[in-house]
Image 1 (cartoon, rainbow, N blue to C red):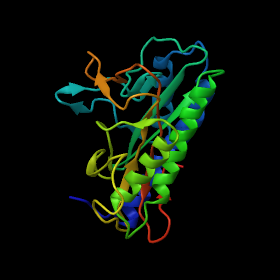
Image 2 (image 1 turned 60 degrees about the horizontal axis):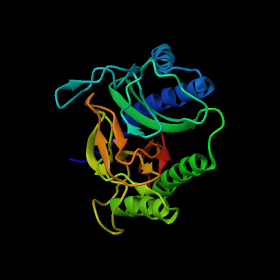
Image 3 (image 1 turned 90 degrees about the vertical axis):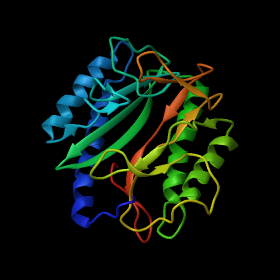
Amino acid sequence: MIVLRSEDEISSIRSAGQIIKATFEILRKNVKPGARTVELDAIARKEIVRRGGVPAFKGIKVAGREYPANICASVNEVVVHGIPSGRMLEEGDIVSIDIGVKFKEYYADAAITVGVGRISEAAEKLISVTKESLSRGIGNAIAGSRLGDVSASIQEYVERHGFSVVRDLVGHGIGSALWEDPQVPNYGRPGTGPRLQAGMALAIEPMVNAGTYEVETLEDGWAVVTCDRKLSAHFEHTIVIREGEAEILTA
């Protein structure tokens, strides 16, 4: 069931989103060669709690498994759900950081991909295309359009630049739960899917691979990696559909 949010509810989601935005600003300064992803996790938790939020991923259960960290830190070929660890970031790596925050019973969710030190032109292009594909998707998230318009715009832009969109993982509705209806695929056909209405809160999150779109899950039960082990990038914003342009709640 797709829920339309009141302005009071949207205000709380926006507050959660602003905590994520502030946390990203601090994490960007700490993504550098020699940093460990577990250190990024600790920094994020401290900042989220200091601002009155609750890390939404910590303890969440999927298929009976409990996520053990506050953020997801996915390095290079890891698409999403990388568990922060003692792994040291190296010059040329890219790391996708995904953060969910709960504030006054409402959730926001966002992700960025950051280069570690100096990265290759290919990695720069992958990050740039993924970020722009999210902007294209949000640009098509207008009251009265269809969800497929959002999905198709992301897919078209990504594939036009020679990359692929992950099929097995999608964006989602968000609000009083972290994951709500509808699912928001990053591929599809224009003019299909649910009609978008003002008040719908969505987390749109293209996951873009340099090679094949096929992915697999590692033995830890969480980290999703590209099957060909080529790079992957991930950007995400929580938005609310308005009568005009969508409002981004995590920017």
